[in-house]
Length: 111
Length: 121
Image (cartoon, rainbow over all chains, first blue to last red):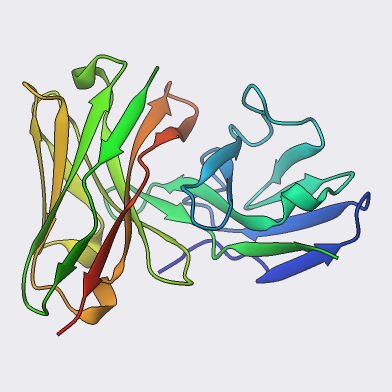
């Protein structure tokens, strides 16, 4: 059961900017850093953004993350066809003896 | 290079147990926890729990307590996740993942390829 809330879907045309929100609580996003994962069909998730706004080596700079209070967001600027995928936010949650919580997931469609 | 290689797909009957393995290579096995995450068909990611290969301590999501076991074999750098009393709702792809944690930032930087477990009569 997902604890972090994301919109089910969003879409854009090539070159556009899209954003995905991730809403949590004081025990997860409000206290800990947020990561974003990209999942292409039939593959394992891939780390896209860590520590709220840091990109791992190899991730294009058109992906950016931010966090404010108990919410976070992922922005994709200059949308490309290969960005069509599912995106999940995640954060450690300090309740219930500690657990990792994921967002509900957002499907990005490139029109 | 860091690799997590999981065992192959499984088909189980309701009520049975399944044991999935995750063989680590390319790093010191006992230096990093291993977590398990599952994904039901068409659904999102769900954290199941973790094991510390250095000592074997575990922490499980409340939902799975009582029917999940995680063990490790340091001689082969392999972690095992066993889930019992399977129902059709346990049909999912199961992933192992290695985290990075520096006291501030926690994230999964390496994932296994996934193991499909199908529960069907």
